[in-house]
Length: 456
Image (tube, rainbow, N blue to C red):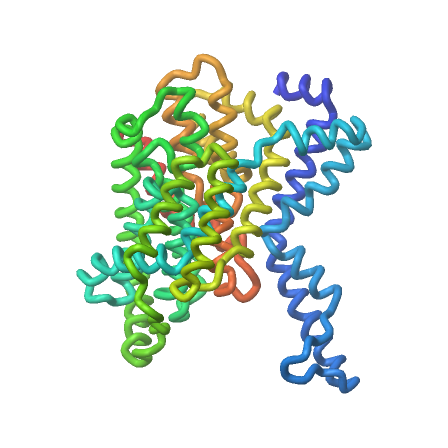
């Protein structure tokens, strides 16, 4: 506390920046309220147009409610941190001058990760990659006779672990798209829907621990601490795999009645899950997509290389358009905007996070890293921890394990989470509730934490 008080006294802007960050976090909890207000204003606007006889004809572009659209924008989680960048820049400009504010945003921050997520999300959501992933998971789903429970287990087990090789953002995109088709379209109860969303976020957060290049919180420390693939598998990877299976089986047992209901829905609506198969995708087209996916992953630190490769990817999809689905660029851009806003705010939180981390012993550090992760990107937590001198191996383990175990508690806890929310939010009428997500992810988080702490 003495260090924090001294830093706050020396630079009051630190306190103001953190206060704005807290307001942005509070805003994320209020998104369902804004969405409900937007729906009410839209309904009132349509009723008013009907009274005035100004309802649009089919094919015409109708009038929109300005305030309904504003409320809808304020209810989009992906936009929140970008919105709160505006008052932050105003505060910096007023207190330090516009050149300082401009330099902070334009030169002091690294936006490579948001750019990478936009590119990898777009490629992973393509029809060839999604079809290939679905075929892989179908092998495991067939063991359970292709029931909703079998697909659910396959997607939530194989998909997150696949993230160790194609990166967590790509795994999140693939898993969310498959869950949308194979699970959420069948109408699970709200409790089951949130439990699955929380389980997905936690599993993806730890699913990239088999390697040292796929999980953002590990990327931040791997070079500095000398962690390679063998180190990750020995200390984290196999535990993550055990935790994923344990959490999945726990939820599978807990929601067994729900699975029976979904199976009944399948039996009585046999065509509900089918979609047009489309023209078969040639192997060379799928191979091209795999090449661009690998190129992006291998050059994830060099934006010039993976953005340049992405432009060639766009040309490739244009040349093979009859084998492609519609380019899913808008969700990826929204997620990139979310992460960019988080980078801007997170860059000003080190003044209090670093002293907190450096003052804790092993178990308190694990708990502290987990708690801080819920309110800040876990990659930022591990990065700041890597700046603390003389961190022992046990403390290094504790901070990374705590950060990844809690990576599903909130949307902002792990970089790929906004991608999953963007894809699946349409199945939550008033948007994804922060409390609902927290409760859904709490069980798997406790399981992962227990394994990381007890199994050494």
